[in-house]
Image 1 (cartoon, rainbow, N blue to C red):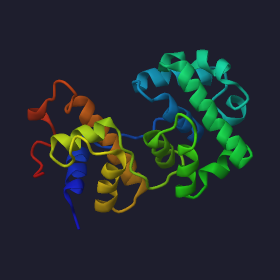
Image 2: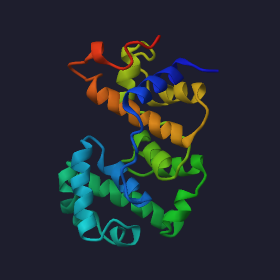
Image 3: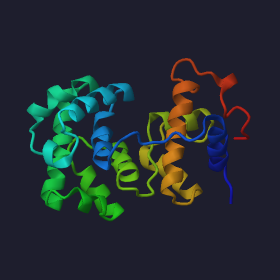
Image 4: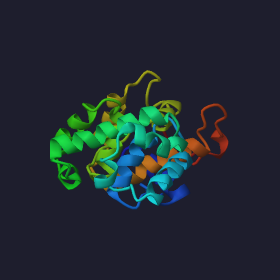
Length: 214
């Protein structure tokens, strides 16, 4: 059965087309990017990733050998670099300890188990964990972020106080589990929120969702 959530997707896809997320050259880069993108723009993350790439550190074996103090200056463009260096190091250490340093084993882990292990890592919240699960592990998990919450709240589909899990359940209850669909959907929501459903100056009259019967 088609729902309002399908209508939103259709309107956004018609307006913007495929977003080709996650922009990365490897699944490991997705994992790193998911941590670095916390509280910053993707352009800043790209600069930090480029720093690692130039030094041939965008691979698990190399980066996992570095401590937070060594990682921090390399990811400085991403902001909050000391905190993010510790969080990134914590994620890498979890893979070392739980999966003997074999990234492929982690990527093939059952979704619920992988999510539990990620959330047990200090500094990793639901959004970061689910981004890794969807974009790196290719699990049918719907990622919720501030953009998603803003779009749904402004279209009366979610109260302002709706928590992460409740909002995620709305999508999972309405949509069939599909990795590529969830991938594209999340990217499209980010697109419409950043271009039209802006935090302070929304452009409602030009928004692709204006004509959708919500």
